Image 1: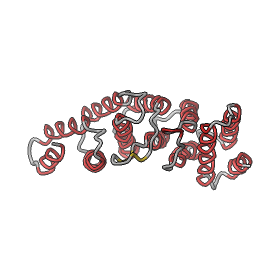
Image 2: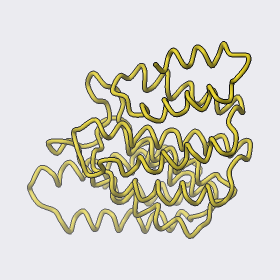
Image 3: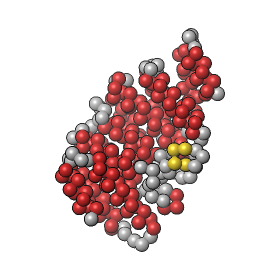
Image 4: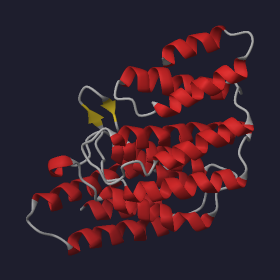
Length: 264
């Protein structure tokens, strides 16, 4: 159905607006399709192309934002089910919109605030943190949400009062584990570290503040230390995260010095 609509839309010379509405509706209804080819290549990639072609009007963009935000609560709290694809790929749609807005200015401040507020909430409450899912492709909710937050930090609408909530979100995600207490294995640490890099580069946070925050995270981890496997896996998540941050912050020498201390 989606492929047929897409072909008709691309070949259409009249009635394009109505056909685009139908196509967008179909895309949104199937945003979390478990066939990775349909989900990634046909729905997500083609949505990005439509966005880049400046084909969407204000009403259509608003509809997409509202539906994607609604999707973030779809069966939230489940783990090891297919619902995570709907949530995670709704985040990718919002990410594409923020990226485009940073280049072309299509959003109001109200739109931006709606996206960042709901995305930060989702970042904290999502518990299905699987990366690659066999036969279904990337779920990758923490990584996708991290990418969105990075783009939000670059926005003209971003406000410094969001920093603490962002740090709380990273804090929460560092200590999440996959099924059977499996730690992150699909570069989630790198994607989350880029949030802090962006905050540093945009001067919303200082190297000293990041160093203090990282030390508090380590203290929190050590407070709950035990011989249970969850503790060791969470420790690995934390260590991988600060190592990733170290290699992304070459120009921030003071912070790198603090990270070296934390790694001892």
